[in-house]
Every structure is written in structure tokens, then in C-alpha cells.
Length: 458
Image 1 (tube, one colour):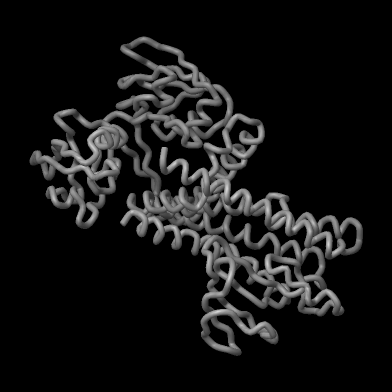
Image 2: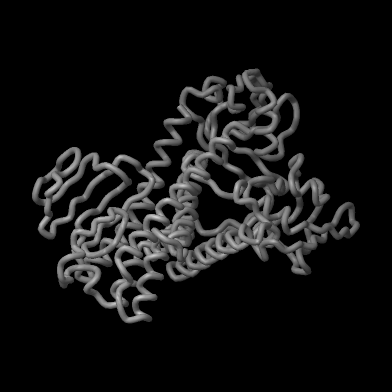
């Protein structure tokens, strides 16, 4: 069931990201007067599609098929990408039939440098705009919730916070000599700012000021998931957001909006604390206590083989909360800020991989991790799922603009070189570089796929 759920959300996420990216290339090509022969979702053999000549059809088109300017909109066998085949351009199809003919006005090769750059960068632009639209929409509809506390309620075992020396009850006062007034500021200054640099953290513990240091490389490990940060604010509540159908939670009588109080008579202060206890009792029962409208319920609940009972949480808090709302222009500004912040963080993460401060093995994720993340975020609700799509959209945009063969950035490098030397690069050279790029991308995909599998069994 988890596999089907992961696959379902993976297809939704990849479908949205690929469609938006390729739509950018498609629209830019059309606006620039270029002919688009194929708009494909997925790679490999054609499964089915539509064009104005044949209508809707299954399977491959005839070898001698000529759309006469009409585009074939298709779904291909492998849902791991997509492409737009633009006439007169070396692309994933490796079609070079047009080489022996004179450039036509509707071909990519006949257009000026700026039109070519516009078409090649349009996919990246669309992915950035998608993230910006999602962040802006969430800001406009939901606003921003600011948790007015800097006191730690729970520190996870074997986490970075525990290694630093932070304890439950500590009040965080300053990070790198900057005062912090909310939990958002705590997380931002610890985890997001100045990746790779050591942090100094001043805390108040039992009315005594103590200075702690957080190693920059350890913080990077927490960011890449190889180690957890493990910090939870005081007064955290574990509220059930969605009881999964036919789950053990449903069978036990748990309902949406119930608040988990304890497991095996042990008070629960964080969702990670709850999941840790449940994983210790796989295929066993735990004594679970929860509150509903002030009434306490206690019942033995079966834990499945994965260490779950079957619900998605809402992390609430009893501390003072400020709900900051945004108007139209304010939400657009907040959307731009969040887009830039995540983009900057991702670029800095790439730099840290090349510096050797982050392990590629620990930080790179492939289709399996994306599918798992899509399922987990979807279970947390629409806002979390949309945030996940926005983050992936920015990631896809940055990766695609890198100056590497077979990526949009690699094509852009070709165009810039040709503009400088005043003539086209030899076709054989372009195809050779394209083939190298495709081989490297396939090798990278195999590597991250292997990493994903290893993570599942660890």
C-alpha cells in the first residue's frame, strides 16, 4: 500500500514539474516562431498521444511520420523526465535529418542568439515561477505563523542538538551574536545561514548563561539528512491531522484533531519522540493515551511492521503564536524571499559537496527518495505537499541551468560560444558532447538510485 501511495504521489510531483518545465520551452519556441514537433512527458518509447493528423493513438508513430508543422503531444514509457523536440536543434532525440538542408525560418538554428537563449532558459524560468507562485499563494492564503518562544522542549537522542550540548528547558538567547526572539529565527540562524560555518549559541540554563558551539560540518550533515537537528520547541502538541483508512489508529478509535498525550505512560513532547518509541515496538502493542475535547482516552494500539500506527500529524504549540497576514503585494514579496532563500541554500549545498564538506552519497536523492518524500509530505496536508513541490521545482531549475552537457545550461554554453566565434560548432562535436552528457546523467541516475535502495535497507 505504501508503495502504491508513493508511486501515485511521485507521478503527480514529477508530472507537474516536468510539464511546467517543458511547457516553458514549448511556449518560448512558439513565441519565437519555431516549430515544435514533439511535446513528450516521459522518456523512451511512445505509449500514446495526440496530434491533429492522427488524432489520439497508441504506440509508435510510423517511421516516415511527418507532422507538417503539427506537434505530437505524447506520454512515453519512463516517467523520469520529458522533452520538447524543436525543429533544427540537437536534442535528446538525436534527430539530424535536417542537417543536409538549408536552415528554414521556423527552425531553431535560423533564430538569433537572444531567441535561442530565451527558448533554452524558459524551462528553468517556468520552474522558478512555479515555486514563486506556490510560495506567494501560501503566504496570501495562510500567512505566516510565528512561534514566540526560543525555549527547547525536547532534544532527540543522537541528534546534533544533543551533540552540541543543548538540553530540554534551555532558552536560546543568541546565535552568532544575533538575538533571537522566535523559533523561526532559531531554525533560520542555526540551519540556513552561512552553510558550513561554525555557530556560537548562547543559552540560558537555570538562570546561567552558557556558550555552546555548533560545528559547521555537523550542521551540514543535519541539513542533508545524515544526522537530525533534533530540536523541538516547548509546549509542542502532537495533534492528529489525518487518520489513515483501515489503519490501526482508525481501529483503535483515534479521530482527527485528537491530541496524543503519552505512550506506555511516557509523556510525549515531540513527534520524533513518538516515532522513536513506536519503532521500538514494531509488530507489538503500545498503551496510547490521547485527549479529545478535554476527555482522556487510553487504549492499547497495534504498531505495524514499519513502526507506525497510521496517522499524519499536525504539529501544534501552546506557546504564544503571532499570525502574520499578507496582502497581495506582501505575499508576492514573501514568495520571492522564500524562493531566493531556498535557491541560495541549495546552491550553497552544491558548493559544500564540491568542497568535500557534504557527502554526495548522503545528500543526493533519486526517484525513490522523491517518491517517499512526496508521500510523507502529502500525508502532512496540502500546504506541506505544495512546499515540497516548490522546493523540488527550484532544485530542478538550478540543476538544469548548470553548464553541463545534455542539460539546458550545456546548450546555453554552446550558443554563447557560437555567438563569440561567429559560427555554429560542428554538428558531430555537438552530438558527441550530447552523448557524453546523456551517459553521465544516466550514470548519475544509476548512482542515486543505488543510494536510494541502500537507504531503504539501512
